[in-house]
Image 1 (cartoon, one colour):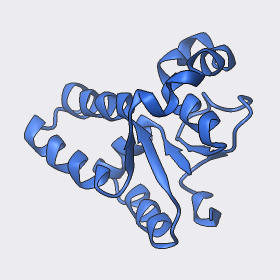
Image 2: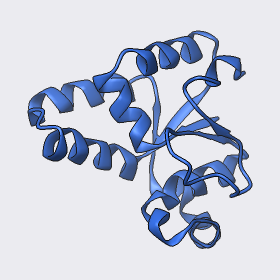
Image 3: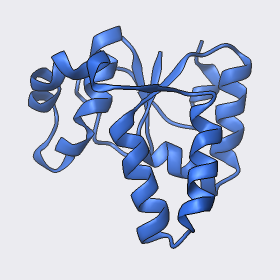
Image 4: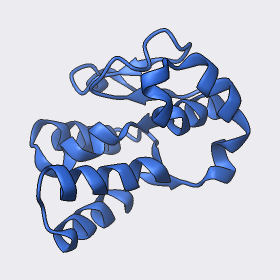
Length: 132
């Protein structure tokens, strides 16, 4: 499983290239998941920072979470301590993504460097085309 960081979800909703990468990964059968806090973070970014309407964002998020598995705390919560220890202080809000990756030996799809050196594979939109 490859876990989506919130910035990927935002990029899927407002962009073209990331949306294409998501569609290609799904078409190849890559299992994708996203912790629920990342969905909420995406909602806040899209509405508060980018000014999109809440209704439009809800529709877009529903469309994505129909094909990307939303993950509740019960899936990854047991790895919170381990995930927090591996993340830099400024990246502590990303612990659910890392904990979910640690829980199922998965990778993380992100546009930033917060997960480098944490012990899990990190994917970018550019290199995701090679994921299986």
